[in-house]
Length: 115
Length: 112
Image (tube, rainbow over all chains, first blue to last red; front, side, top):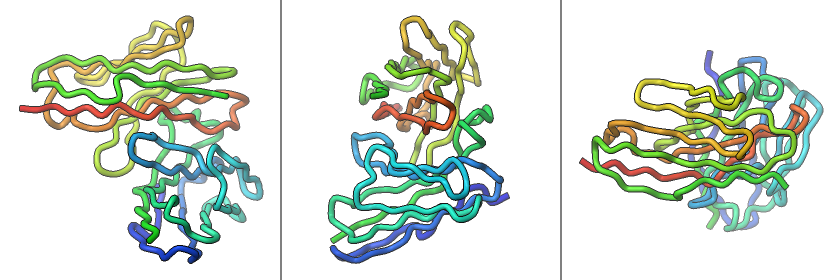
């Protein structure tokens, strides 16, 4: 099993550009979420999904869109990149409610720099 | 608003020391508390705690939950330089469809 796969691992964008961060999991997990991690801020939730076709906003959703057309994929779209979106982005998945005794499985992260 | 607070935010110890990391929480309808270790990349799972007073143990690491006082501690005995990492505490709350809420983490540095 590949687990949770995030692409790309690194990306540099110019202000105003758009892009999509990809996240795919092969564990048939219902639950997927996107977090961003900034120095001293821990992990902050951007968007999450409890199943295909269902998404909801987290703590810091502005400037990001998501969709969940399949169980496996949960892409994160930056509509018009801003320097404030420079961060490390993690995708995570779990069985429903995280109650699989192993918490969330995280992807390896995408380091995004907006210049 | 659900809140998870970790202390201290950073800590420097010498090899062989014992450390205690703290995590307190204020959430609606608590379900579980999780500890993760994060080195250079993604967080890796350490423990999930759901019941008060039951210690979870893995090697030199152990953790316990107090649901009355709303906190958990993570203990690391005989620390090694490989324990240097950010330790994250997260709480699962709500209906079961609510994502994890993370604290800001404790950065532990173990020096030889």
